[in-house]
Length: 136
Image (cartoon, rainbow, N blue to C red):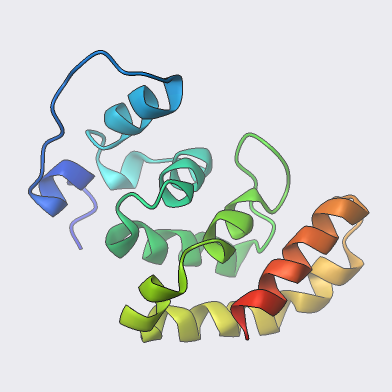
């Protein structure tokens, strides 16, 4: 993948500019125009949580998570992982190599999640539940 290209360029699809009904839609529209190499953790979290550009962005997110399983966007430590865990199963069925990589990252880091003192118990429980759900 050429990370100097935007999602619009990679997908060959340009969204029409119109009056956006929400800030989320406006921000998603704008992020699709930025080279994927320039997207930060929160940009990835937002786009992935909206199921935008998964074919291109999951690989980038997994690379970040392999270095820091609790990588944080604008909300809380682990919010990027949370967005990855909420990707529909249909995506993972079509990209088994990314799913295998995610399993390896989780297995390598599960103790770090369990013993982390930078996330509160409710976030820890949410992430662990998401991991359990993914593995079913």
